[in-house]
Image 1 (spheres, rainbow, N blue to C red):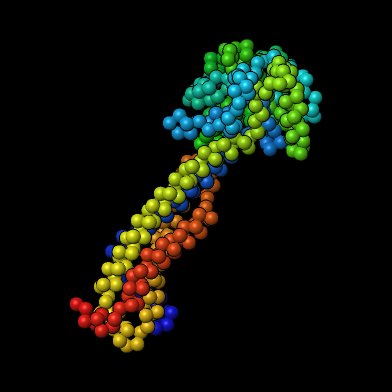
Image 2 (image 1 turned 60 degrees about the vertical axis):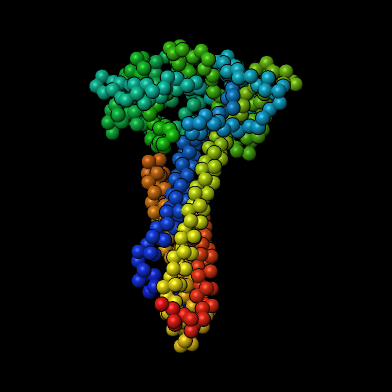
Length: 425
C-alpha cells in the first residue's frame, strides 16, 4: 500500500464515521477557539490601549505627584510600575500633590529647549448644552494652557488655540471636541465657533473646534471641553487636585537629558534635601501602555492553560475513539495483512486518520477563535487582527496531539496477528 492510498483510506474512514469524528473535532475546536479567541481579544485590547494612551508622543513625558496605580479587575488588585522602596524612600515619597504655584514655578524655571504645559482635571460626566440640544452626562472638562493641544496630540479643525492672556485671565472660553460639536451643531462642526454653550452650569464661548481624534473602549478623546486651568481654578473646587506638568522635546534623543533637567528643576521647588528621594514621578506615555499589557499577560497565560487542559481532554477522547476504531476494523486489518499489507502501512493509516481529525478541529477552532476575538475588537474599535504566531502554535500543537493520541492505537493495529484478526467476531 502506497502513502497516497493510506491518506485516501484515512479520509474515507473519517467521512464514514461522521458522528464520532464530529464529536472529537468539536472538543479540539473548543480548546483552540478558547485559546485563539482570548489571544485575539487581548491583541485587540492592546491595540486599543496603545491608541487610548497615544495622546502624548514618544518625545513627551509628564510629571505626576504619584506613580500611576492601575486597577485590574474587581478584586482590588493594583498593578504598580515601580518596585518596593525602602522605608526612608517611602517616607520621603509621601503623596504631596503638585500645587498651582509649584507647576507655575517649574514652567518659569525650566530652561531646557522644550515645550511645557500645565493642566488640571476638571469636572467629569458633565452635561453640555446650547439653546436647543443637551448632551448625555458623558463629557469631561480639562483645564490647560497654550501648549496643551500640542502636547496631547490634538489639532484644530477651526478657530484658535488659547493664548497667554486667556490663560492668565481665566476667562470663560473653551475649545470643544469633534464629537461634542457634532452633537450640538450637526456635521458642520465649525458652526460652533463663537457660539455660547453651557457646561456644568457655566457659560463658555467656543473659540475652537478640535479635529476628530477617534475613540477607544477606554477613552473618547472627542467628548471633551477644554478651557484654561485658571478658569477651572476660578470656578470649580480644586482643593486636593494635583496639577499635571507635560514636557515635549523637539528631538527624541534629548529625552534623557530633558528628564534629568526636569528632575533637577523640580526638586528645589518641592523643597527636597539632597539625601531625600524624589516625591514626584516622571511618566512616559508608553510606560502606561506597558503596565496594562503586562497585566493582560496573565490573561494570556490563563488562556493558554485553558486551551492546554481542553486539548489534553481531547487527546484522551481521540485515543479512545481510535482504539474503538481498531477493534471495529480488526477483520479489515487481518484481511489487509493476509493479502500482503505491511504493518507500516496500517500504522500510517491510523496515524493519518488521528492527525487529520486533530487538524480539522484546529482549523475550525482557529476560524471561530479569530471571529470571536474580532467581535471584541469591533466593540473596541480596532482593526481586524489575526494572531499568526498563536495560529501556527495551535496547528503544531494539534498535530502533536493527533500524533500522540493515534500512536498507541496505530502500533496496536500494526502488531495484530492476521490469523487472529480474521477470526475476530
